[in-house]
Picture 1 (tube, rainbow, N blue to C red):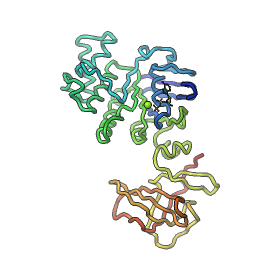
Picture 2 (picture 1 turned 135 degrees about the vertical axis):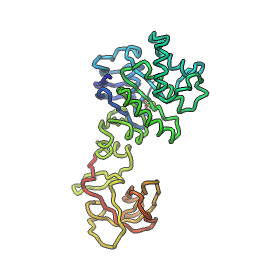
Picture 3 (picture 1 turned 45 degrees about the vertical axis):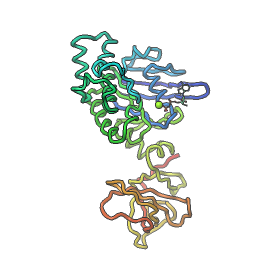
Picture 4 (picture 1 turned 90 degrees about the vertical axis):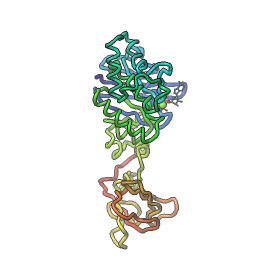
Length: 336
Ligand code: ADP
Ligand code: MG
């Protein structure tokens, strides 16, 4: 188990700052996810840590050792990419044996380790297959086994589940988390999928234009986003105006709905704390939840809309229904 530390790491491609003065400290055994939109610099950051790219500025430490100038081989890192990059002409077992061979570990010892790694990713019995005889999910499990078989100090995963369909992706997320916990290996995952980031990680780092927006626990980032970008990237954000004129964000789960009894205190448009009359524009049934798209009363087309996510317990409000919307001022998080 090693820690990872980035100090002021930058990478420029001409005029593009793919990584811009990034600081990050990952504790031994921690699972950190780098989350950001396409082109935000996620792969660049991972490549810098892996030693596949050299930084323009800054320093990188793994296990306390300054590896800024070390080659990828010298860093002892397990890597998994979205494209499985398995050797097609080799069997599953040979694929997993490969990194051991590179490290001159051969014979029964290597075989034992490879079979153990395959067991950890639940691929026992498939060791003689070729990659082409496996499903996408199984191929990605082989890639994972190959990445951990040589007991790397850290594990780096670049959108490893991105090519899989939703159900399979969710299954593999659970398995990935379990494997990471079993191995206790320091892990950095890269994804653009906010649900994946929120559900898997001890902490997430939100990236935009190569710059860190926030590093925090999933709950902290979701409920206390550092800025508007984080608020919107991590899910649906209802922006409301606070009494002091600042903007704040309320998450849909924190918005309360009640049938409009024609009364109740109202303090203007979206000031919160009490109740605001609204009309249901759309009610979307999501299984356990109903998501309501609401138009606040007294506002014209394109004016303040709200989204509420309410546990489904009985008949939902229909489109056109008049309702009361409220939220606690404690659930409004000011953003800049
Ligand atoms: P992400 O993985 O978040 O999609 P990348 O790290 O791949 O983002 O890219 C970040 C930025 O750096 C993008 O603007 C991309 O075009 C640029 N970039 C990445 N790699 C190179 C490269 N080898 N040469 C030039 N520009 C690059
Ligand atoms: Mg990428």
